Image 1 (tube, rainbow, N blue to C red):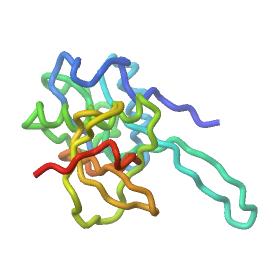
Image 2: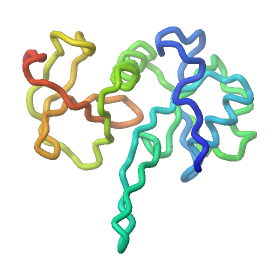
Image 3: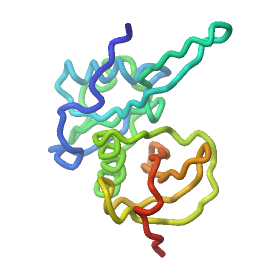
Length: 178
């Protein structure tokens, strides 16, 4: 059985980080291992993980895996990155210039997961539809774009530097914004 690190360390809201956020670009399939390294070093991080279904060819056996929502990336908080490259897992660091925007965007993802919503990566380009704001429910106040994915309405959440994720929504809980 695969060992899974916690998605968030420490288990506090993103906006409560005491240091600046950075994004580490990691070597292939090293996100979870780097999360374990961060745990060991006491470095605050966020690695959103979602459940991915795979079906084994020939046997049709279903297996679920916890995989990174944004493959190849992990977010961490340090004023000045220290000991990040010592692990041998990090390829590059991305400095987040607009901390407030990043915190707002990544907090949307964190909140959706914390409330048990289905969040999936957006793997193909999506035509921009209506820009909306959630008016009720647990995501109230979050803004994004509504789109149809696999015949379900989803709120597309963008995180600058990482990519997009989709949260399934009830269209009655959103209003179009300019």
